Length: 383
Image (cartoon, rainbow, N blue to C red):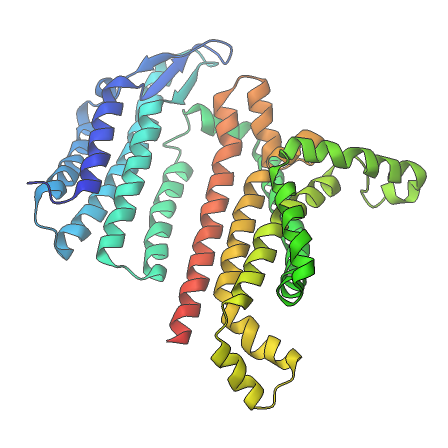
């Protein structure tokens, strides 16, 4: 009898992906397609230990759903994830012994599908255990730390993505810092503009009547097109006032990218601020007035604190959106992780693309976790 349908679906997806997709690919160089290497071919010797957590996950589909089983499922999912990465590294090392020095050993589709399945199984088990958010973050940090130790130990050095990192170590660190700086430079003005605009939109319906449609229109403009729209006026400004160019004002670079990111991020922050204020209980406002509070005191001591969860939800949307869109800004010379990603796309180097994409995903996940922790803490304080 099936007792865990989520785990069943994940296992069925894994059973379909494992034999039909390549676990690794071996190419003589970057310019030609790689020959697929199946998971079955990689499972030999000590690598067969990967089957143990897989069997435990399969048992979790049919056994009675108790806390002990959920804990075992979480441990099995984490173990499967780590062993999968270790298997990819060890098999790549074996292939590298007989391959030419310029050969590329890349992670295949089966690896990524199984990795995602393991992560989803771990997340589902933790949800069923009702693990507090801080404990869940700690467990996630342990798994990420274990992956980091695998990387530092040299066990993954033969994989093409690790070789791409080793060749661009300094540029990679600079790209992460530039990407994070663009996100921060966009979010700070967004908050400083979005909060007052949201308050004004709540107070004045005439402002809301044209402000939100305008911000909605901005959201419909493709990012590349918006960068192009900003290019002409900013280039014109730099041309008429050469001194502005010294401060980075121009048609290309970080400034137009940050302006575009601010325009995209304004809608969720402004709308959620307005909606959060609209959801404040009239009784709370009346109580504040009864205490003799002025409208300004009501706003800062009653309305904004009560609307804070909704405002933070809007800021979370803006942050995650900005982290992703900042990658596109590389097309106008803003740099960041998008530069690495597009370099890989133009060179038809998938591993280089992944080197740019994976940190963006991890950055977005980390931001989401931080907002979850903040919102959870806020809810606990209000109980």
